[in-house]
Length: 207
Ligand SMILES: Nc1ncnc2c1ncn2[C@@H]1O[C@H](COP(=O)(O)OS(=O)(=O)O)[C@@H](OP(=O)(O)O)[C@H]1O
Ligand SMILES: Nc1ncnc2c1ncn2[C@@H]1O[C@H](COP(=O)(O)OP(=O)(O)O)[C@@H](O)[C@H]1O
Image (cartoon, rainbow, N blue to C red; front, side, top):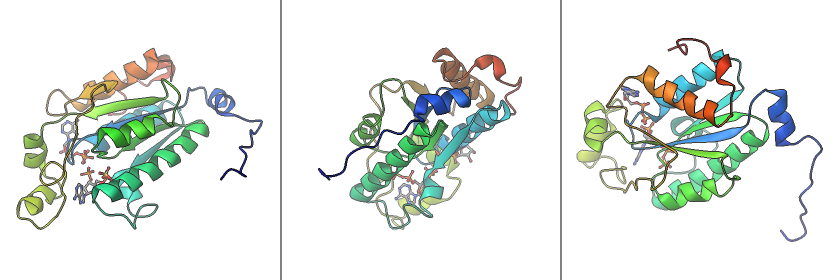
């Protein structure tokens, strides 16, 4: 590795962001299975896309069909899953995009490692803090029932740990309030940070 030297290209992240009228960042949604990560990230992406912003949503279930299909759910495999996703997200932010990611990402160390890939302010951690009891009662994929019966090993919240973030930029419990209000809170945060120009958002957010 010592013989490999970084090549600084002329077109950089700031230039790509300017071209797209946005300030590229990574919004990292973390929380239990069924907490609402994909729903929230998907609704926010929809609202941003409708307003003309340039986005990409990286979703755990989807990434595990390709880039990470060789990985399971041991803590080591999750670590490698999130290492790869962090690096891919970094490239996408560098490409000028507002990147959203929806991964359980159960440990503080994994999330802090991804945060460490970005300058201050570019990694926005969103803790989807919906309680385990609510996630388990939703059980949209029937996975909690299988985990309780011992048919799935290492299931987050049941037989594998989830560590709550200490200092997430935002915390959203989807068992309270409605989706439109939650998405509006995210949009307001991005506008305040000048990631996007909030004036461009379409009324109703497309929800
Ligand atoms: N053992 C176990 N534990 C947790 N989740 C499981 C497991 N097995 C399969 N699934 C399904 O995989 C989705 C989570 O994948 P992630 O890549 O987000 O997980 S991780 O960040 O690497 O921990 C998760 O998706 P979400 O429900 O969208 O969170 C589950 O559908
Ligand atoms: N903001 C929300 N408000 C109310 N219910 C929600 C919300 N987001 C998700 N849900 C419910 O929770 C279930 C799981 O959501 P999902 O986004 O798939 O979670 P995750 O990606 O964290 O596994 C959905 O099928 C839906 O019924």
